[in-house]
Length: 339
Image 1: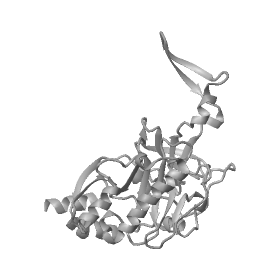
Image 2 (image 1 turned 135 degrees about the vertical axis):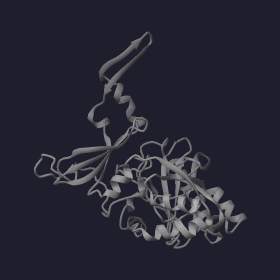
Image 3 (image 1 turned 90 degrees about the vertical axis):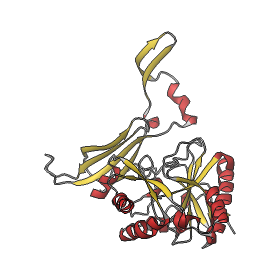
Image 4 (image 1 turned 90 degrees about the horizontal axis):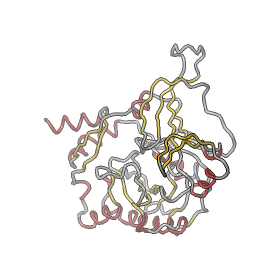
């Protein structure tokens, strides 16, 4: 029988962002500890910026590559690599009024008739910056966060079986952090809902991009208990009970916990996914979440209907997605399609 877990706490524990979708719940380190409100220090000493890997004025985010733990301090390369991601946090509605009470510190930038623009310097408790650390960072991490051109590819069912799947199986892609969640070794206090059925059940957990302070950018992830379902390509009618449970029970749990109705949610899968264990995204319909473009997001309700109409739909269907210019899979698929 499905059961509701206690309401998750409102503390913050931030993700590794990917693209603008960084990797929210999508990628974590090997540690299994949960967050704490006590003051902490960064897991290294010093940070000398070597390169701005990427920045976005629209998303208020910057990705920095730096050297840490340097002994000489003269930049001779004796330190370790780290990636630090800095992102301005969203406004919290209940705290916005505090910004304007009293006499806020202001600098006038522009004034014309009834219009004026200022720099406002908020108090410390309202000026936090989400800080994500990847340390120690490998060359693979540096390339991952480096801005790169994207290319659309169209992958046939044959391409998947003969090119994409062998390529994925040749990679060492650890998803131990997913099993830690499912086995209750980590993040147990963050589980919003669980259906414990081993084949047709799942856990529902807030994505780490969402600080759970406002509903406009609501973002949760349903992770299925059943192992071995890597992505959309593996789905068959056998998985329909699981998919229907995720859609129905996930919407019901979000309504109960956050008072957001099912018709106000975008419920979808990614292809290609960021990690290869079946999971479903739940986001507020008005939130322009990263990865919701037509070249990546597949609505769960459509997936269910496609499988009901054609049992082999995702084994045969040509799927379009974007790959970074440096992704080895891009070259493999391009070579196959031009040969």
